[in-house]
Image 1 (spheres, rainbow over the protein chains, first blue to last red):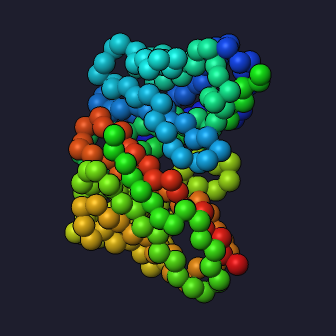
Image 2: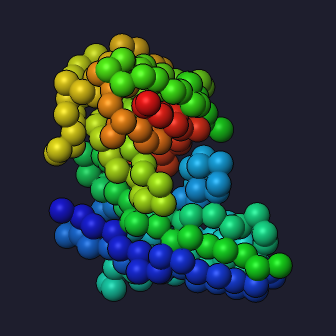
Image 3: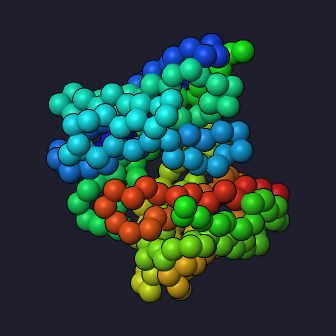
Length: 117
Length: 116
């Protein structure tokens, strides 16, 4: 079974600085997708970024980028120029690429990010 | 973008009563929807996968008679918590995604259930 591990329960960053959130996963599959979701205090789940395993190029979305190391099964999220609105719980998630629409999303335990002004 | 609407956002009910939560995909059809439960400061735990026109698939340890799921159309899935007890108090979130492949899940706003 696939597992997702986030080893940092909490992180803190100064406004305008850069922070990296760690995520590792375990799978025997070669076709899969990885995601980072953000959950602010409103508890709405918001997609931050996604990565297809078959793509070697790291995904980027404005201030958010990932470091995808497939061999190491690592998928870290870098937030540049941190803003107060980035403060939230961040979840790393895995989904198999085999099986179609019923594939479930497996979440890590989350990292609570605080942004200091 | 794909929108998932969940209702109600907050509900308080008495022990022993049943509560229904609705999840709608507003601008896309979803043959599959997912129901998650989240305890405070914890991750999302998948409860069940809702399949349009067929029975839901429940995760291990989730009581199917307690958490009734109905997915009667391509845009609506419902979760009914039957004979609710205080330990059922939690945050319930539904999700769905348009298409297959790498399209991400979109989440409803969640329902905070409090059983008194």
